[in-house]
Image (cartoon, rainbow, N blue to C red; front, side):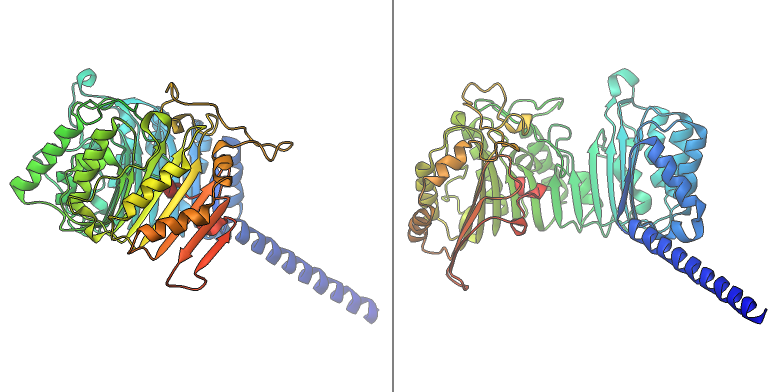
Length: 519
């Protein structure tokens, strides 16, 4: 009997140990699954996840650090309650990305933003309004509730405001609920990065403002949505270091080669680029308000010109959007003369209508005196590319520049299916045949750019460029065929480091796939 009792006790201890082990394994598995970003879009998945989290809220809710919710069709009261209950319980949530339909039910519009506002651990918040609204309307409460009542000391904030049928139809020309400087003012003591897109309104000329003493980076909408009126931001963010027009996933409007983008009105704007530049210049001169210097600027050439900034900017990333070449060249020359960067990255399209050479002004204005590093990205949208002529122009350009480092990127985008907006414009009569799309049974599909570059003696081209540039110490060439996520080949000559010359296949370290490399 004693043996049986001891055996039974041992079995119980074994079962208990197995149970503890299984529980620990489930916890570790849950911890691992929740350690990354959880992204949910379908209502059934969202509700299933919420029930899972609430089944053991004390151990699961604190584990989640990053969450993406696409609440496109959230309507039922029970579902709204589940989502809000989980949000309010996420005590360690660091990053939140939420998409809401501006035309959702009043319950969604009020409950979800209120749950977001209750979070105290958030540092990064992204709010996206889906749909089109008429301003003003109850849907505007989405941002007002989430931001004006926010309890978290947000460091990074991104707002995508839905477009709205404004002023004339609704009889309203200004709404504080669409003014980002007012909308985010409760966060002004902590905010370091602010990204704005969509239907936004600023107080023009006069009006109360708020100072954001720690705001260092500002990302504004692309020029077709929001021509730069900078005075409100100069006053509100006196310590700004980085300015950008257009976010990571914006598609910049492309212009025909003969379009006068300087004097033409852009999309739905009431002023031209020249008029916006004049406004910004007058404001800076009249009030003496301007940033003394910036670390970086990123945006289209037309945005840079319209900004009217005259302060030095060390690192400049510019995108050519097309239009009449002489006009864009004049704008670029003025911008570079004002800013005198030490680093310049220029991305431009190459297609027959605008010739083959990169867009760079002459150095007679003196803007290039401080230029140390130059990067040129050629996005080739054609089945013909005169490589010899391009390198001849590069050599001529280098002979007048004090640049010590040069990077050339040749990337084929000669495929309509890759990106409809990536062809300049799709109805351009100068665009030739497209490259073939590679597939499972055709991995070596024909690419015009690749065919041209494979025939070139690129090392010899580099030696010729190095000889023509007395100051050049480092030169890199990277090229990739269409449909590739990285360069096919990278060549480098570096006179100051060992090895001095290398030639290799491209890899992830080249950063080719990063969105900002398209600039």
